Amino acid sequence: MTTLANDAFPNPAKGEPFLLTPGPLTTAFSVKEAMLRDWGSWDGDFRAMTKSMCDQLVALAGDTSGEFVCVPMQGSGSYCVEALLGTFVPRDGKVLVLANGAYGLRAAETMRYLDRAYTLIDNGDYMPPRGDEVAAALAADPAITHVIAIHCETSSGILNPVAEISEATYAAGRKLLVDSMSAFGAMDLDVRRIRYEAMVSSANKCIEGVPGFGFVIARKSELEACKGNSHSLSLDIHAQWTTMVKTGQWRYTPPTHVVAAFLEALRLHAAEGGIAGRGARYAKNRDVMVAGMRELGFETLLKDRWLSPIIVTFFCPADPKFVFTEFYERMKSKGFIIYPGKLTVVESFRVGCIGRMDEAVMTRVVQAAKESLTEMGVSSAAPSAAAIAERAKLAA
Ligand SMILES: *Cc1c(COP(=O)(O)O)cnc(C)c1O
Picture 1 (tube, rainbow, N blue to C red):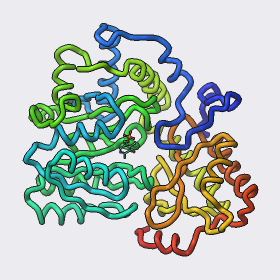
Picture 2 (picture 1 turned 120 degrees about the vertical axis):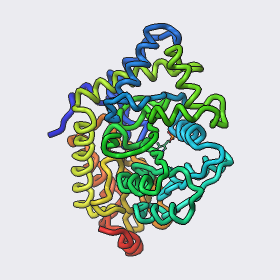
Picture 3 (picture 1 turned 90 degrees about the vertical axis):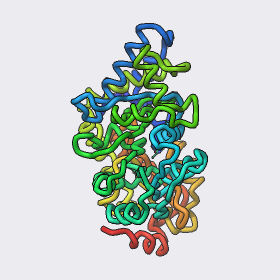
Picture 4 (picture 1 turned 30 degrees about the horizontal axis):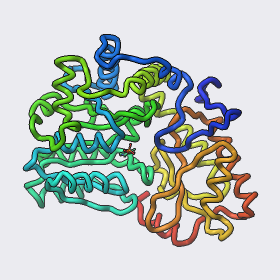
């Protein structure tokens, strides 16, 4: 059993529910406790904290040769995606955006705001971008300089084939950027196995910190060439990096308490066995939860091959007595916050597997879903025929 110590959990007696959401998520008590003091942003103690954090993150990306650097950036994940695109894509560059959900579309929207050229492959709610599709798009347009891929598209929970996308990108002589926001720390994105120039993630996803900053892990030689690309003073990753190298400081006020919490989260991550250990717990969370939900009659949007251990989309039951908002409130009253779905075609909801939770908690989630259905008078959790037909479009 992949179980956690009891003191890791939120306190239901105090009315604190588990967040079955992809961040902010349920954090360990010790992570929250780490914030109970103040740090001076320029002080040596805090500079050492920043350095330790960056060194640990580069190591998690598998870099052992000093080829990669980590640059933290204030703000939520989207700020950091904007910083990534604005810094790494030259003003006369062109990006192929691979979208199969809300976060891919947000990357395209970011390009529009940046007023830089891009081409969008929009595969709808979840259909994964495949290597041959990427190869064809790159062959058709020699102006494309970069590809941006979403590692786990959190809006459906699909795990996109980044290795395949990376191969197609570099075979065509272009460069890959990865939004691994909801995957890094639990899924492999090792620079020795998957080639990319830079990836971005944030504090409040699989490392299980609290929200407040994100970070870019980038090939140093690539970052060095990015001076002057950025459209934004505060979101310039190159400027943030050069200041950090020179002074050890963030350029503007850092989220000191969030960094302290994140260091404790990194300690727990290492104690759990790093990426492999964290990924195994999340996979177990998913397996126990999905099996239990299927037993109740619920069906997943994705076939097993595409199910990430991050978050799972379920179709809403076809039974007219099922109303999502009511189901949500009933789950909440039992101590579990679930997440609305983001599909445009059929009704759905999502259950996250990440955060400070283990299989014993996931078993209770299934029990709470069962009781909620009974209370609502829903006799079957089976989805509509339209939902099943939708899923049939996806390869096994
Ligand atoms: C969470 C997430 C983001 C960033 O979202 P914020 O709400 O700005 O933190 C970006 N991409 C993916 C894939 C995500 O899961």
